Structures are given as C-alpha cells and as structure tokens.
Image 1 (cartoon, one colour):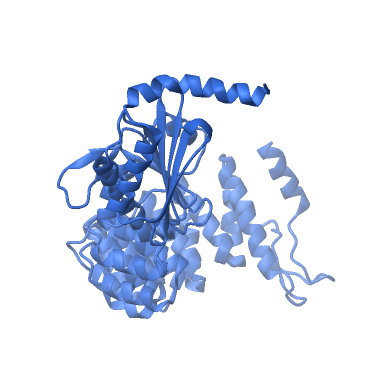
Image 2 (cartoon, rainbow, N blue to C red):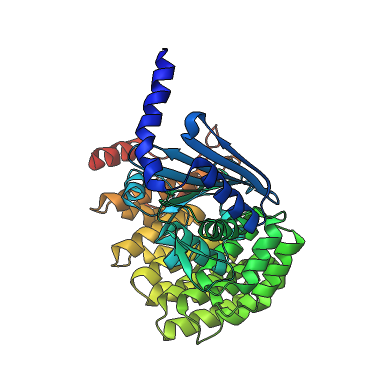
Amino acid sequence: MSGQGRGLIRRALDALPTFLRRGRTPNELAQAWSEAARRVGLTEVLVLSSAFDLDMALSARSGGLRVEIQSSRTSRQTQLAIVIEGLGHHPGELDLQAESFETRVVKAIGARERTIGDPAFDDAVYVRGSPPLLHALFDAETRRIVLRFLQDRIDVPGSAIGRSLGGRASVADGRLRVEMPEPASVHPARLADTLSGLLAVAQRLVRPADVAGRLAFNLGREPLPAVRRRCLAVLVRDYPGLPATLAALRGALGDSDLEVRVQAAQALGDEGEATLREIATAEEAPEDIRARAARALGARLSVDLGVTILRQSLRRRRVQLAEACLEVLGREGGEGVVGPLGKVLAIEKGELAEAAARALGETGRPEAEMPLIDALQNPDAAVKLAAAVALGRSGSAAAVASLRQLETASDAAHRRAARQAIAEIQERLTGASPGQLSLSEGESGQLSLSEDEAGRVSLPETDDATASQEDR
C-alpha cells in the first residue's frame, strides 16, 4: 500500500472517535447544512466531502456574496470555518480584528493602525486600511454590530437575543471569516441563525458604489463630533469639489460642533467666511477654536477686525487667540498693521512679544524695522533673538549697526542670529549699482557709501574670522 493510502486510513481511524461523539453520520450533517442554507435563502447550494468524509464543505450564494462552510476533523476536535466573500474590497483596503496581545505587539513594533474617532470602537478593534472606505462603512450602527461580531457575538435578525460564535472572527481582503469548534451536533436552526447573523454583518461591509456619497450621508447622521471631524477631513482630502462633498460642507456649517463648522467653513473658502468671522468673534466660544477660525480667515481677516480681536484677547489674557491674530496680521500685512504689532512688542513679554516680533518681520513693511531694532535691547533673550531673526527677513542696512552690537553678545545663539541677519540683509542688497551701501564699519561704526568694481556688498573678513573663533 502506498504511503498516501496509509495516511488516509490513519486519518479515518483518528476521526472515528469524533464521529462517535457527533451522533450524526456525514449524510445527516450534509442534510443539516443544506437545511440551514435553505432557511436563510442561500442559492446554488453544493455540499462536498473528501475521501472517507473526513472533511466537508458547503458552497452557496446570497445575492452577490459567496458563502462557504468548511469542516475539518481530527481525533481531538472538529473545526468549523464560515467564510463570506464578495465584499468588494481591494487587497489590504480593510482589515479588522479584535484587539489582542498579538495586535499590541504588532503596534509596539511600528505597525500603523487606523482610528475612526469612536473610543469604544477604536480601543477594541485593530484596523488597517483605507480611511475613505473605513468612514464610508462604519456608521454608528455598523460599528456596534461589527464590534460585537469581533468580540464573539452576533445579532440574530428577528430576535432580541444575540448569539455567541465561540470562535475567532476577522475581516481581511474582502472576506469575512469565523473559525470555531463545531458543536457535537449541528442543528439546522442554530446554524441558520449563525449564518443569518454573519450575512447581516457582511452586508454592512460591502463596498458602496459611491464612497463619497456614503461619506456625506454618514456625516449628516453621525452622533459623535470626533467621528464627524475625521469623516469631513476625508471628504475634503479625497473627494474635493464633488457635489456630495460640497453639499456635506454646506450642511456642516450649521453643525453643533464648532470644530466641524470651522473645518467646513475653511474648506468652502469665501462661502465660509461669515461662519469663520462669527466663530472668531464669539466670546463664549473656546479660545482654541476661535484661534483656528482666525487663522482660517487668513487674508479675509481685515486689519480692523484683526486688531479688534487682538486687543480684546490681550485684555482677557487669551494668549492663544492673541498669537493667532498676530500671526495672521503679520502674514497678511496691510496699512496700519505695524503700529498695533509694535505696541505689543514693546509692552508684552514672553511668547506674545516673540510672536509680535515674528509678525513684524513678516509684514515686510519699512516702518516695522524700528520697533525690531529697539527690541534688540529687550532684556528677554528670546525676544531679542526673535527680533534679530525678523530683521534678517525684512531689515535694511539701517539695522546692521545694531545687529553688529548683538554680535558681541556672550550668548552664541545671539551671535549666530546677528551674523545670519546681516548676511541676509547683505544678500538682499547684492546686485545694486556702483555707489551702493558697504556694510563695513569705519572707526565711527557708521555705514558709509563705497564704489567697488564688482558693485557688491562685503563683510570684513577679520570680523568673520574672529566671530567664527568665538563660537568654537
């Protein structure tokens, strides 16, 4: 007898105790499976068995889904696997499993996990895949059903009582899979309930034909603000300009969550300006949300409104909002912006004074130079450094003498900032016609006009060498 034949006989003998414990013949088991399939409306049902009926399988369809039941028997136990295919996912597009020691190890070594914004779901389910598909599929009810499924419970349609699967469930590569020990006797009604519950889960995980439309639909009925924020971000990033996206954004302008409203208004541009202005000026709104609204306004934040919000925030010591106004006013500039920014730099301390110095440098306006030169004498080292950097961005030759004084500071960071600022000023002046400014200092330390052949600005080599030695 061949080795293969001996192996089949050995498997048959090993399976004999299992058959005796079952109390059912293979034919009776096939009939039970077929009856369960009929009860849930499966079509194209085909039951197959291997040699000696050691393994059995059922193949059937439920609409666009393909259902397989596989039974593998050994002397120790009979393992049942139910697989539902046809979810329409691309490979790697959506993988789900319950959090476990294994998933914690995988995450600890750097595996990337997706979250949806629902703590109850995110803490219990390990998710990998595509954010658009994730947010399109997982509305609140689907999250509840899938969470129970991955935690070994399913809802039986038409019954208020859930059922334990008693096995391991997962979703990967467009298929739902459950592995569990097969009970000693498979009752058609019990198997039908299990199949019905699994099909209900699978149908919720079928890829929608219009992902953007489903995202917009979910956004309108999602109860958790954090999920709505992420869903909206996915819509804007992956489906910009689509009718479904624009409709969702307009609807989100009236959202109860201010962050969602800011997100939507920012994405809508001019159409969202009124909403951003409303939130930026709302005294009762959280400061961080008002700051986000002010930044989102950008060039649409007028100097008058920006200065008004700035003054109010300074009076109420809302530093985060004040910094946002300083940033926008500096970046967008405009007539009359230097005065308020210079006043903040002169009066305030710490982070606000630093922010004012950066903002003055961003304006690029000539009148911003003097407040920054004055700030080089500020006792706060961080403010002094911010002023030097700002002068490097927008200062003129008039700032060089004061920056040279900063070069003599004991702090290496200030010396480097001063030299860098002078170099940046020099670079901006390079290319002027003969008769340009020379940045070398005479005995009086004043700037003078020179006419060199190349028409370039140069720094004295001895000063650079000395400064280089100081920093070593």
